[in-house]
Image (cartoon, rainbow, N blue to C red; front, side):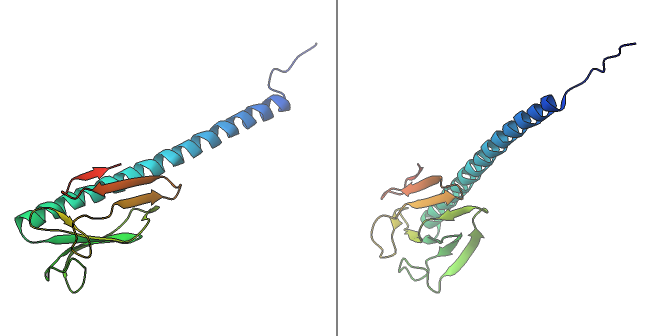
Length: 151
């Protein structure tokens, strides 16, 4: 009696495992890039919303400002009107999402008309550049008239 055992050879099994490993590597790396990009966009949108809220509070009540550091930001009320963060009332302090950071420290205050002022009380505010751990960047630009735009 001649019986043949049907099945896979060890070579076929190794080739299948190798192909699946390559596909898993590509899939995981693409998912990691996608997730990092979504987190960067989420943090950028959150910060842009905060800037809009600061602007509206400045128009409705009193001048509010923001200090953006490398890993966090602080919203404050500019009690003394000097466009810097010193002995002012802190409204809220938040940390960035893990893996997101700012490239530089930015200080800005919105006046009662909604115009952004830099830390010398000059018209205009620096843009805020956020980066993720993969090097992607999003920039929040604030025009001298207070328009907030994500690039």
